Length: 410
Ligand code: ADP
Ligand code: ASP
Ligand code: MG
Image (cartoon, rainbow, N blue to C red):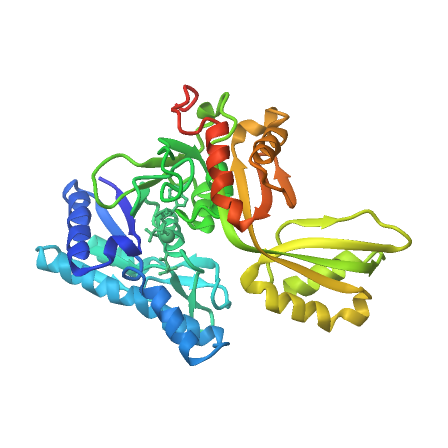
């Protein structure tokens, strides 16, 4: 008998009927003799609805009030699931993030968990109760409600699993596991039996929304066995683990993609030792996440720099750069919208030169122009036109044989 943390995402708790079904999945685990802590998201698309409600009121809501608003979504689900468990004869109690002792940085909208005080949960577990915790939220040291960033309930679950020394953390969702790419977009995508923490972290960071990147980070750092599984059917999902043995011969494990990317180019920039640091420190201070950066060859003390940002951050980016125009001494800012990033990920790449070349060749055969590139030991990312995104993912999925079960996978 051990402690299991289960997490159910928005679509899995999207109606009263689904919540009653989730209660059964929780009870199954409890009946095995385990202690169970359940983390839930807001019902269905209710977080999006709350975001849209705020937008109907103001173009620039305060981050504090957004957290106050968005944290209400999860509170609805915890109470309903607890009622469902009680109705079915099980002793359960719901906790909001702060009641569960989840402490975060003093940041709104994207706070990191800094500590979890588990006394209250420990006590209730001892009394045999099932604990139902609101995902995605915590409290800062100055008693403010904070949220962990979209998709952050995964992180609540894994962080609780780490703090409570859980045996494992199961992430139940609307697909039966982690696939070679998003199965809703590429029909031939194949479910993986297992994937390494590092590969999953890259995929999550590069846009595979199935897991929140920080959840994978926590799982890796605290060696929490993590499994992504279907909330509908009782079948094995995808294990995320260290598992070095499964990495032989496998070059590309998965493909991630993300649209709504914009390329920003600053031209006629006077070169100086501190130019780059001034630009990127300034942007970082305004919480603008810059992704791929390319500096072109310098001529006569002038250079140009291109970088990619999320399209949502574009307005703020240009505003910040214009504010610094005198200090930075540049000629012009050019922007290109409607771009997408497509990335191939696999730990086998480290020892296989030519993977990037193969990726470019596949894209060229499909007449897809690559506008920016970035590589690491286990990934290659390309920025292309948004309208080519799905075509590119399908072509790469085919070219790297991802639909086929590889003998190297386990
Ligand atoms: P939840 O509400 O349960 O947190 P999410 O919508 O956040 O669910 O994540 C599940 C979705 O992730 C799937 O419906 C799928 O469209 C998407 N997804 C993206 N990439 C992948 C992938 N590689 N494998 C599985 N699902 C993926
Ligand atoms: N409800 C939040 C969101 O929609 C958190 C989550 O579902 O993980 O982003
Ligand atoms: Mg999610």
